[in-house]
Image (cartoon, rainbow, N blue to C red):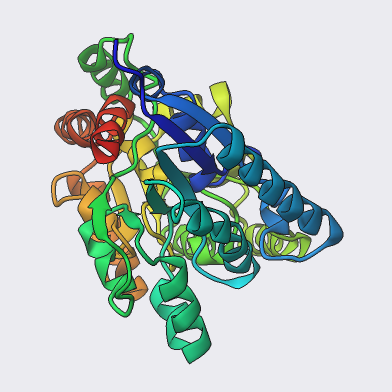
Length: 368
């Protein structure tokens, strides 16, 4: 029997539960990947909460030193044939990645190794455009590696980089929470008892994600049969206070429910009850929330950010290019997308493109 190739995966894992960490969880638990390769996993530790991301402290410096030593040990003892790394695009995290990458840049001078950098977000172009130093360092960081992007729409983000080997595409996938259910029956029951339309905003409560625009839309469209559900963790206390003051000021207590950070059964219940996900993000690459919505048959109203127009087509929702179009698009969604046929189409789009099984198959093919 032929020995398996050795794969070293250096990646983010939960907590905190941001997109890259969730994908890291999927990869480390993938049966297909572990069947195909002799895998070792090292977790990139950085922040305990979403609010900590981007901040520098002694604990993070310790994590950098720990990561460096773990990778060094793995290269000496495990001796991988392939290295997978969750790469950061800018700021302190980029310099951490740059430091750690020197280890396999030395390692590849002694043996043959394929290196893959997986970008879960965008921002490379902005970072390298800010200074010639950033451009030189990023070209050095990406020299002779395979770049994994979430979608061809993100290729322009690395158009100034010339040193990588090739670009590969890996759309995200999410777990199917409804795989053991009769979806057609679920949709029939859901839409036969349809007195209230439930609008869902599910993301971190950060203004870049667009929760404030959804809140203003709730105030501008006070329909008795429409209820808005917000779920996610707060980036700071000031935003939280402002949110609840707005609700009180405009007497929206009966129209809006804030559920806090949700996971497991609470999150499942919100998606099951939702008739529409509204996601007017101002900065995103490939949001997992959209994939989760499709898996439950929930159409999506979103902004044209990153790869979103690759995820949502004209039958599974509406993608707007300008936030001023949000109210009209919302009315269009209410009139034309809140129905059984759309729900079934969204579900099938998920199964065909964004299931965890599809993701596993794609990532194994990439490493081959």
